[in-house]
Image (cartoon, rainbow, N blue to C red; front, side):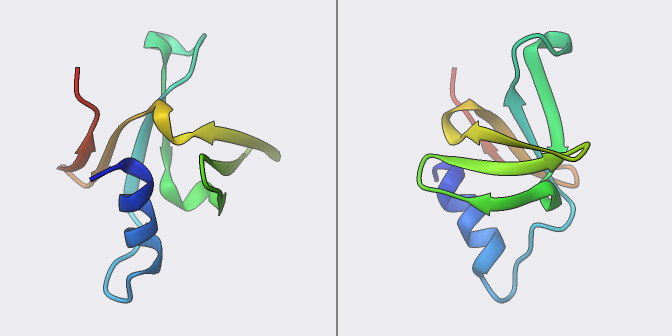
Length: 81
């Protein structure tokens, strides 16, 4: 399942939620070039990117930068090598 489709399902399915979901994505310049955020920071989802609010700043993150999506210890999505 693609990252966007999974996030859409978690956000809109009546028995699922983004609560407790962690997204790891490529972020150049961050330690290890990756950043982790809670999915509750998503304020808008577009066709090719989502927007988060962090420290009062809106940031667009393309879905193709997502490396992993987890809920607790369960990996829901992991980009292949």
